Length: 420
Image (cartoon, rainbow, N blue to C red; front, side, top):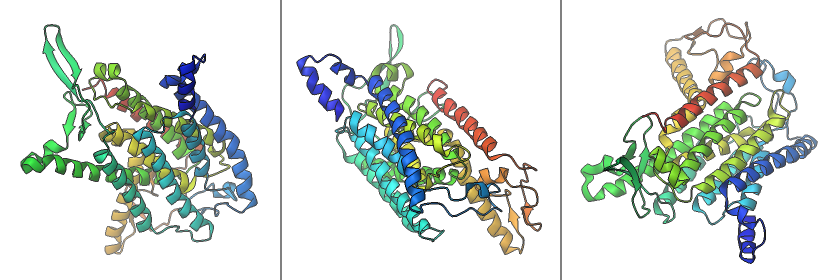
């Protein structure tokens, strides 16, 4: 809103009005504003939730040895993150931008699904929303995002092409923005992969087949990352801290993708309009950092599914928009490990049950729980494949070490722009 106001005032020569046309100015202002809102609103939200009984049921001490210290902690803290993200975005973003609209819809949609899930748990049903309904909501969002990027005339790219001339190899862009199913392959020199070219054998239908496959990939990525971030939300500050790091990396990738000079230098596709993602992502990062004010150990509030589902969806949709979805396993390495650990644990346990044995790959799953199990908490008849560590780490140390891993993988994801 303020962007359009000051652009209008700039016509009359109002001093300083031109600043609002700079992405860097609006992005930093959004970051500061969202952080302030998150910290300020968080205090009132926590007090309100305590007065109205919106606290999480005390956790099982056999799973969380520090659960006694977290009695009567409010949940649904994702509301803080969502409000602190959406308000600055509405104030400082360009609301006619297709990518900005998609990010706002993603945040509110998955936030609403998570809120319903948390509300059902608050009413006494520990299982919350039925998993099938939750997955259906995530799939519907992914389908909508994929179809919008396919059909919207505003969702276009300018493909980078190498041209040999007297001065060597030069990166140029095709003159007109086009609809494209091209994505970026990390660590590969000629790093453009077209989904449509994968269906060359379909002849004139290959473009349509490529877009259908793109929609499928988008849906899968949204569901996978959203559930991965949900699984990562099991310790104080864990998901918020990891997500803030990932979002910072995505903001850098979005900025270089939206800057034709930097995109040409790095030999990546240019995505017109994606600069507004930087505004949104810095608002989101500020909200996450502000949330850590209360969520760092020992937590005064939990984000719940309201926050964790929205976080994963935002990360996934951003990566798809800037055509960097194949970087997700590297950017979200911790989320991936959490999801894989649950799958391995479940399947291995089923194999053991068929043989009348109690088999486990890890002491606990998701993987972060394996590091906080105290000696004597495991059943003596469990046969654990990977029984490490032998002792119990402090929760704050586990969280910090996961942050460090995310910093390393996010840095590596950014370096892929040059390592080919």
